Amino acid sequence: MDLHRLQHVIALAETGHFGRAALRAHISQSALSRSIQAAEREFGFALFDRNGASVTPTRAGSFIIERARKLLFDSRCLMRDADLYRERRIGELAFGTGPYSGAVFLRTLLTTLRQHFPQVQARAVMGGSDPLLAQLKAEELDFFLGDMRTVRSDAEVVVTPLVSLEAAFFVRPGHPMLVEVVITPAMLLAHGIASVRTPHDVKVALGKAMGLQDDTPVPQVIELDDLRTLKDVAMHTDTVIGCAVAATHEDVAARRLVRLEVPSMPPMHAMIGIVVLRGRTLSPMAQWACDHLQQRARLMLPGSGV
Image (cartoon, rainbow, N blue to C red):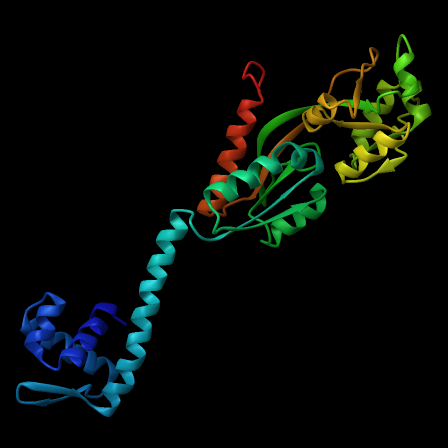
């Protein structure tokens, strides 16, 4: 169905005159006449009765004209919405994040989103890489931030490195270990270590770094993908939490948590990546969000002043 042809039908119906309808449509009268005839051939019946200089819709024509008005209105709304969507003034954004990346990026991302795109509806899901990957493959998420130790590029997804997050151990002020001259891994284990869900091979590597034998994974007294709750536990007990350093800046600055220095422990890092479906084009809003995250990650690089 040619929408321009429908516009000619509406113009003729509203003016009742070929000459005036042609002026409104900005075409010649003969071109308008050919367009109306083509529409009548397409529908298979006459749309107008010609009575000399005047033109009136037939009953069939009135039936078509009523629906054509709605179709043209919907078409204009579609084009308007496409413009707004392209300009990121409407639409939806659905994404996921792990507990570390959420603590580092989520507040800034959502705040900026609300400031610049208040009409966009956002849905953020917090969780581990496995459930987030399942939701991405079900096309329930545009992307998610995942630990690259647990999710890698394959035939279905593409993982783009975003940032390497340094991790460390933290306790409450006044913790018994803070009076020790040298803090050892055995002391951490004695008080119990809590953290987010951690891949088995990472636990084994940490176990080796802590002096555990026979590929024993480091034990966790609490395993929970809720960083706020983990920090609350550490603030009110002698539990030690393993956590991304960037996720604790405010707590350390406010003296709610204290970073432990464990000389015998090697540096710990988690590489965070943006995970998307392979071959699926991101919406303008999702692309903006990924660009924002990459810009924010660049500001976290050494020497950036952040």
